[in-house]
Length: 163
Image (cartoon, rainbow, N blue to C red; front, side, top):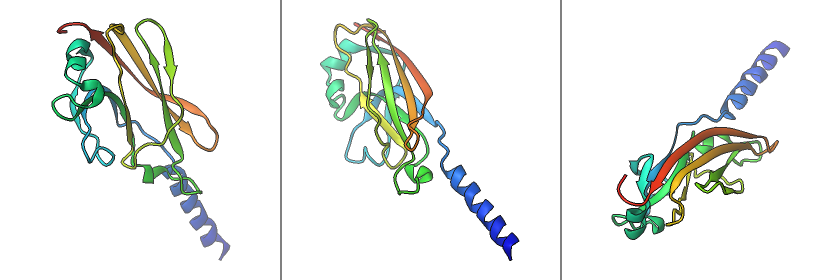
């Protein structure tokens, strides 16, 4: 009787551990659609690594108004949050990002939760003084241990005028 219970316990532990894994599916910079379904589905309108910041700013990309509802943003996508729930019912993994601006200044976000489909994004606020190469580093953070792991890096160039 003890052996079946022991093996069942091992099987359940293996399933729990596997469910706690996090795998990068996508990351990038570009224009995303910010409509009424944005929290349920990431829609990428255009991705790239060279951007005309003058054109984006003049056409509302900083405010999510480019071509009606597009936002200039960076994003990260992993598995659905239901795939990595901890014992208290909360997502076991959080994310944070670090921006290294063209002038060398650094901004680091606070840890945050992913949307339930497993992605997150933030608006890129490229102004007229931020021409040059930008670097965005993405990290996932294990909620229980606060351990941080870098999982992606996105680099893009902001130009004034057509790339």
